[in-house]
Amino acid sequence: MTADIRLERNAFGRLVLTCADGETVEGVVPVRAFPIAAPDDGIALVAPDGREAAWIERLDTLPAPLRQLLEEELSRREFMPEIRRIHGVSSFATPSAWSVGTDRGDTEFVLWGEEFIRRLGKSGLLIEDSRGIHYLVRDLKALDRTSRRLLDRFL
Image (cartoon, rainbow, N blue to C red; front, side, top):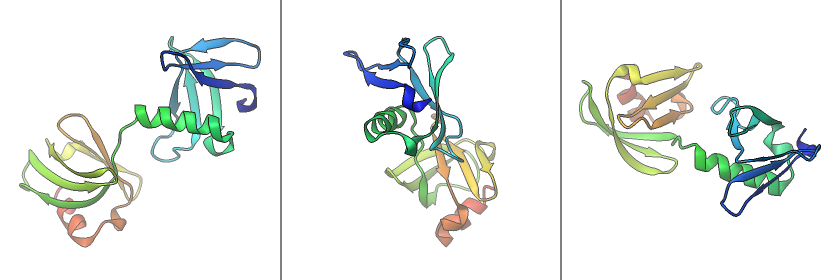
């Protein structure tokens, strides 16, 4: 279906989808079907009324301008820093303050409890801070030894 659609921004910055049959849907929002496991596979363009207006199988099959527009919109909508290193934690009892290095820079957050750390598959984690921001640990084995040791105290 991707060859049959046109996507552009209107004067207000909203995405406008034009389908092959000429139907125009203003204010579509791209939503990843599998944001962590397969972020480039399965993108739905959802209309303001909640219905799926178009489906894109894979981002990498799109023409460059369309792919870039969708990636910009998705990055605005999604914010999930990936933890690369844990610099320290204030306490092994919760709540505790964490100092971490992410793919977006160093930051600090408060972890309310161990239940806010969820496993993703065999080696991934999703950590939710006190403000509702989700941090991704894509692969526990890729973390340095100190970071793994600190994290093990909470798992």
